[in-house]
Length: 103
Image (tube, rainbow, N blue to C red; front, side, top):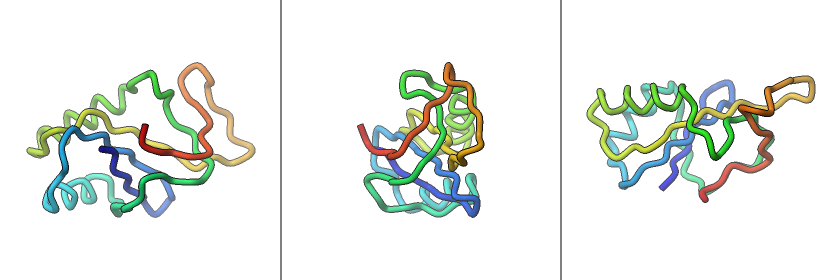
């Protein structure tokens, strides 16, 4: 199950969880990301984020922080930033996404 959170800068945090998270855990994640939970199956917009096949070091740290907050079942957390036409990103590490959806 993938959950999405969006902050005031329109950054998307995608949380991959092996279990359904309860309301308390969702509130903890909203506090952690300073972002609101978005109850959608996909996000349609242009974003830059890590490759699907690579777990980023940022994700590893974020999952460990969530474990320290007593949130169980989280497998991966990744961050997707809105893409601007002038933005450069390293194609070996990141991808350009026009839709973020559950796989």
